[in-house]
Image (tube, rainbow, N blue to C red):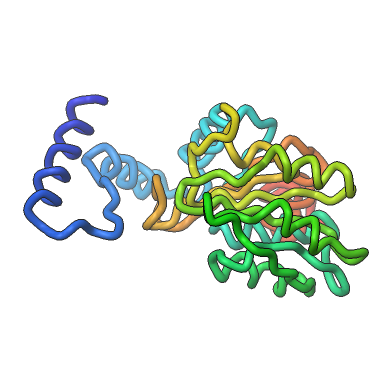
Length: 236
């Protein structure tokens, strides 16, 4: 921890020691302010140098082949579902106790959520309930890692493999959380990270898709860039 970070941390501890504990409060220091000013001065306000650097750091942290920054986590889930070909007539298994975005993204692609119970030991989706809710229409299992807890990914991955069902991971509240010494988000077909104002680290708004699947990342890029494989290229 450098001197600037330590100073901000100590100031934060002093503040919460004398006041009620905030639900969330981002650390914004001079380095963050300077970086924002640098972006404004560059005249490149969208997806510039810092975005690429951020993607590279996340990719290395999670040991994944691809990391793609998006407008928000909800958009990651919607584009990821579409890239997997999920739509009308399909079902996506999702925990009954979760953020509304996880359900809304399923409706957004025309599919139907199939709700599962959670495991009260970790507030995440129950593997046994997943098994009970698989039908012929099941096209994906959306695992949500809540409150920094990890779902039982060993069991869930086995369920997905045995039934040939993709596993998607919502890690909006679990950045850096590990299951058996492996970061959650790196188990399934793709993972979603969120950088909203109340998340572990924040960019104000923002999300990230991480995956090892080149076909999936290429398809998501097309959705993200309005029919182009890359920004400004390959209009189709």
